[in-house]
Image (cartoon, rainbow, N blue to C red; front, side):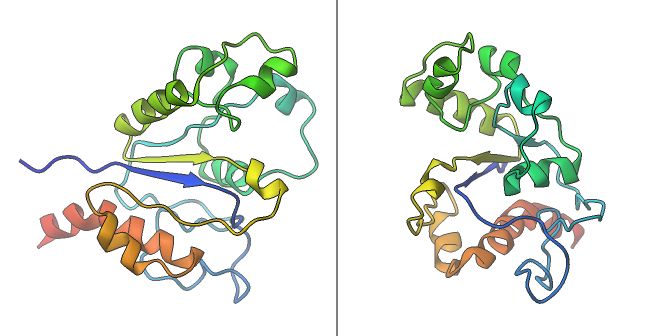
Amino acid sequence: MIAPVSVLLFFIDGLGIGTRGPHNPFDGLDDAAPLGIFQDESPLLAGIDEITFANTYSEKFFQERPRWISATTAAVEAAGLRFNRLDDLRAGRAVFMYFTNAMLIERGESVDLRTPEEAGEVLAGIVAANKFTLYEYFITDKIGNPVPTIVWGEHREEIAARIHSLADITPGIVDVLTRGTRDDAR
């Protein structure tokens, strides 16, 4: 029996979906679907379902929408995915970008403080329930350091060997997620 494959893309700052053209490294990638979503285009899900965004948004985000949104927020909107709210966080179905919830508590939100281990357990549960999970942590972007790609799991050596830039991540994920589908088609 083949174990189901799940992927977590832990997004630490990066590219927006943007428009097509030579300025966008996703444009022109072979087999970029379902992850290569471009502005004003409908996503093609290529047979992959159970896709989720693990991050939580407070009501303040929706009431006082910021002028600039993150790349992942734009991607979630473009894909038509549901945004997690604080009730999802409280129920253990989501993680805040500052995973201990300390920032939410400082802002006056009624949520429990989580240890990094507890937040990791919640995120692991979300990953186990979905084929593709996106989680963004962007606090590191505020200090602007280069960020490494960390790959773990069953196909880690294969995927890590393929990654030389941000543009190599999507093809590696798509290959792993669609491998069984391609084998079934033969």
